[in-house]
Image 1 (cartoon, rainbow, N blue to C red):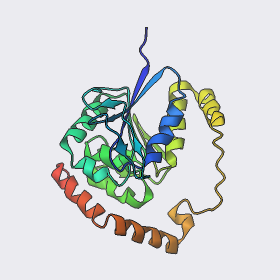
Image 2 (image 1 turned 135 degrees about the horizontal axis):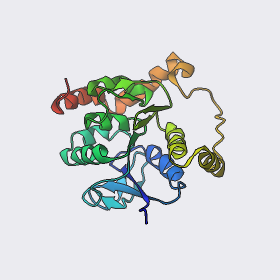
Image 3 (image 1 turned 120 degrees about the vertical axis):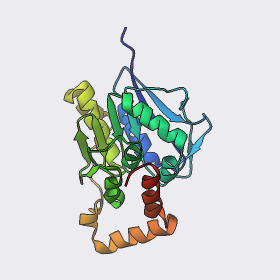
Length: 230
């Protein structure tokens, strides 16, 4: 009997919860699949939304998976600085059939050496950091390059997961999942990308992020050097 498809999601402190929970919700409807939320312990992990999520497995308990998915969030630099977490990402990613991410999770994949020479997506605000790790940044909601599938920022996790569902189970199944979730986006504002939001709103967003994580990009550059990228 063929075992169920095993999907491992990295769960870490200060993850953007929608980066994680959106694709989890979609991929939970694959059928014949086991999903694990993986971190160092099974203690609750605080997200950026102010609530915690309980891991289903530890890094040690998941030595391999068919699909690796890494979300993003303000906690990514701490993950990249963490040898245990990065060793796990590199090991599981090397053996996985599909290596995937949402938002700035692609920077974790990159730092683990899994995106060198691959086209990749990322949140628009840090897409320009991808070349630090040898990846080729692409401004698309979902980027597929061989067995790497990387989503853009946050809500692109739904599009990514539906794309992966179609690859694994066929378009008809993916369409049924989309319908079941009533994923029919019609946002009240047209400001979901920097191109449409306008310079003033983009600048306001960047000031807010700088106030929260003032050295984020500089720290990431230093971590890239530490990880052997130059």
